Image (tube, rainbow, N blue to C red; front, side, top):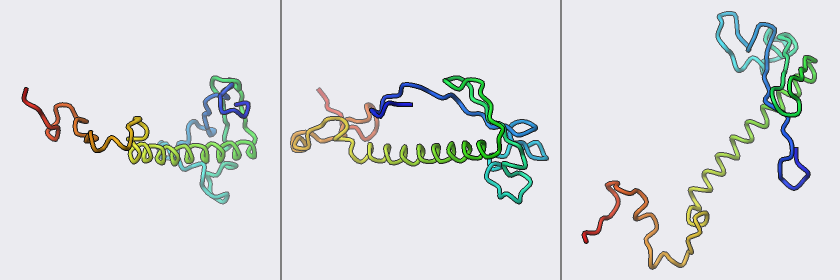
Length: 132
């Protein structure tokens, strides 16, 4: 995916996970996202359901995996990736909010001259107005 420098040079594609009947539908016809993570004794485990993974787009376009071991590995890898992306996304947005002055390039010594955020909401009720 990258050469070690952080620049993406390739893309594997979008993953789709399917069981024998479609997109993880239970007996009532309701899509269940937790079907992949049931225990091995369950009737909805990865091995029992028979998951097929197909890639769309990218370098692995139209490649299918139906081996239970490979499917289970890809399912858990994808889940870990999505959860870590969500976690670090929350950290990123929290840091953006806490260190807004750093990210906007405002000098910390300017707080004597300028009140940061005084005119942040143009036309808002908290914005000070000057009559000319």
